[in-house]
Amino acid sequence: MSHNNNSTSANDPRQPSAAKPYVPQPVSPEDLPVDYSGFIAVVFGIAGVMFRYKLSSWLAIIFCAQSLANMKNVENDLKQISMAMMFAIMGLVTNYFGPARPGTRS
Amino acid sequence: MNFSLFHLLFLLSLLITHLSFSRVLADSHFEGFDAEDDETIEEEILDHHSIRSPPVTKSDSHPLTDLETQTEPDPNPVPASDTPSQSDLQKPSATSFEYWDEDEFEGLPVEQPPPEPAKDTENATPNDPDPKTTAKSQDVTVSKKSFTVEIVCGSFLIVFVINYFTGKRENENLALAWAAKFATKGSIFEKNFSLLGVGEGEDSPLLLKEGQTVFKFYASGRRYCQGLLATMELKSRHDLISRLFNLVVPCKDEITFEVYMNDEAMDQVIFAVAKKKAAKGMQKEVRDLQRFAGLVPNPSGRKWVVDELSVISESKEVAGDLITEAVLEQVFGDKAYEKYGKNFISMHFSDQHPGMHRKMLVFKFALPDANNMADMTRLVALVPYYIDLIGRYKLSSQARSKTETARVKAAQEAYKELQNARQEALQRKKAEKKKMLEEAEAKLSAEAVRKREAKERARQMKKGMPKMKMTRAH
Image (cartoon, rainbow over all chains, first blue to last red; front, side, top):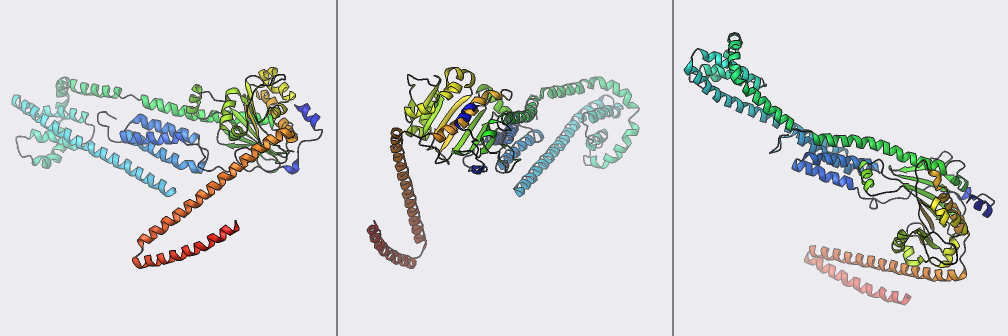
């Protein structure tokens, strides 16, 4: 391939005058991929709080961690993730420090 | 945002304190209940003892109080003070309980010690099974309470955090290895483009990191094209759940080169090469391929690309012109493909590209390991080769006539669609305005309604006039 370059053009293919600086393409917020893990975290968190199910609260924390790891845009995504984290932590707190669930001893 | 966080934290703390309070209250209630139960039980036992041997009553009460204090660790003066008041049960007044409490409580430790050890051993044995059984039942309940959920989830979280950092570093190393091979001094892009990187000036960073899996490389300053943007989309190595998912559903590291061609440099070419299945999908889904081009059958009588690949083009002639000898020899031919073409995914040239920029060349390759970056050299070399080839290529007159008609048709259709869309928007606006007026009318009183009607009549008269004017202009 390199010899092709030489044979077709003895001179440099570069044109410094034609150089354009990089302009990042603006992405509208609707085009962004849906944050599934954040949504699942909220669902599990609410389930954990309402039904007092420990496993559900722990799974909510795990999915919150995944959502945090995949977060691209700090400002936009942090709100939903923090909401999911609140639910998950509240679920854990009520499960461990709250009154015992009827039928089981916490 | 700050206010809502503070609010949430405040509510959370309230919840926690409320729960802890309720627990304390519940416990104290249990305490009182237990004490009362013990009281009644003790009363019966003591009465029994008193019938048998009156002098033993007091001494009997002491070991019982000891056991009581042992089983109930809370320092609650109620149960301890109950027994001396019970020994005074001969005095039947229940209200004297509280009056006697403190005095009796004071006297207790002085009188009790001597009879305690003697009666302790006697009464210890029959009462031993009780604490033992209660202790046993407690042990059993404690051992039943297992921590599997906590251990499993906690360890998963720890592994997740560790994996986040190692995966992040792996992805960064892969991107940097690519840049080191193809974008640094003396590399192919440095020889072809004058401006490399995303910043301004000499020391601009080469790669732009958008998230843990997306890296971008920009180059500009070459003939025939405005610039080149290479986007690396890597596997989600930093996310443990995605990593486990990718064990089941395989995924590849990809790099996509987008070359923005100059308007005057690119002729009317719509051309694509991809693996067979992917090519069929592309031809059906991608708008410009679907409208203008079709799958090109393998021509006989000349060397062509490997069977695994298929070509999409407007005409065989253009396809033949773009699949040159050099390309076949280097990458797409039978021999070369085995060695060098495995990482090729697709390539798509179009002057009617759907999206912002119209005239684009798009190349998609799979990224090899960080150590095997050199495998991709020939594929990357395709990029500047095709920029030059397309930049110089001129269609023959026959081919041009065909392409010209097709594009004119497409442009007309697009224009019609635009017109329709504009008309619909106008009609919608008119309908909305009418609705607004009607609603406003319904609210107003009768006089205002009359006024409105008069105004509308005047408006319609006026409308009647300009209509004629418009038709004249047409």
